[in-house]
Length: 466
Image 1 (cartoon, rainbow, N blue to C red):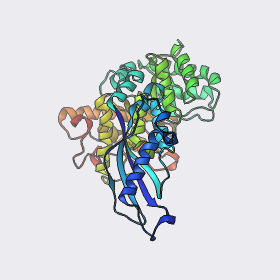
Image 2 (image 1 turned 180 degrees about the vertical axis):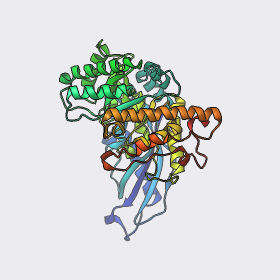
Image 3 (image 1 turned 135 degrees about the horizontal axis):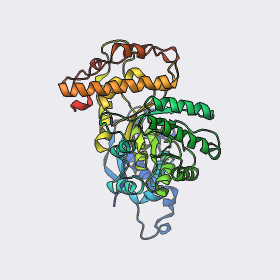
Image 4 (image 1 turned 45 degrees about the vertical axis):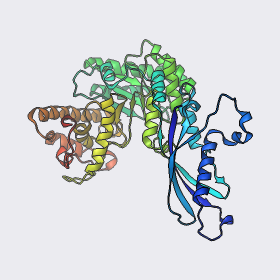
């Protein structure tokens, strides 16, 4: 039998009414009894109290403790306990919402608050590991073999191996003026952006907004064609799954929508169901971009922020923000960045680029001064999803896009030169370009250029040296 392995941390205290002295802690026998009840409740809940006759004879499903628990010494009337257990994978059939059911069990009241005299407090899931058979089932249902990083780059006809996919992501949450959105789309695509997406769901009725989305996709495609580039627009389909499936089907079957056809589905409450529904109902399209909104909020319930990202990817996301992007000391100096943190960020992105799927994005609060160093660090197989870096330029989004694309184009050329010459990293951007970056000042805040010379220290190397 396959098991979903869960590692749980919980503090177990004696009920004050039962203590013989103020800081009396539960015995190890009491702790083990509490753990046994946790395992029983995770599978059966109170249904288990009805006895074996309540279950089909052919269904002896039970949770399984993996090894002995780690029980800390008593402190302040309690013990912190960590233990691993297996939940039978047959409880979570992927085709009918198994991932969602697993999260519901771990995030809901699956574990008892009290067992006898023991109070169980602050349960925290430390890790969740899916069995390989469950992973492969999800891939066969929801993952498309033609949605690897290489395939996505090919769909956008990016032939230069050092050129990244650049996207502009903005938030028309309260609606948008269509002619204004068309002008922005045309301006940023003329500057070199290949994908324009709505970063958040528009509260307007999607049935009324749909024709506007089609016009935006056509605007992007026509602007890109003038520069011999493939470009398009992606609507945000973060609706209920049935609504999103219908919209995605209409989008992919509308001949006026250029290829590649792309949509966005946020990784929120309906993210898993919507992604899975789109993948089950549409054979090859669309490419789906995702931002894992609940990445941090889910951490205590699915074991780590990474687990939520993995579940979204297994449910059908093709392009996703993996979290923990490279960050830098926001000061004008020649060093001071946390090299260990940059190592970890680089390895995080390499995990996805090496396995070839999903395509990770560099996003979430970046500004133009970051782009050169980040390109040197993570390379062209990462998509650069830029919001404020483009939108907040004092001369407008078109100027912001031209600045960001110019930085990345120059970074690409410098990386090629450094690779050919054997330099440890690419040379700085031209002084005039650095001056433009540092005169940017979004919302009046100073922006500093981050030189590769300030980043690649302590053994850290650019992507073409790894």
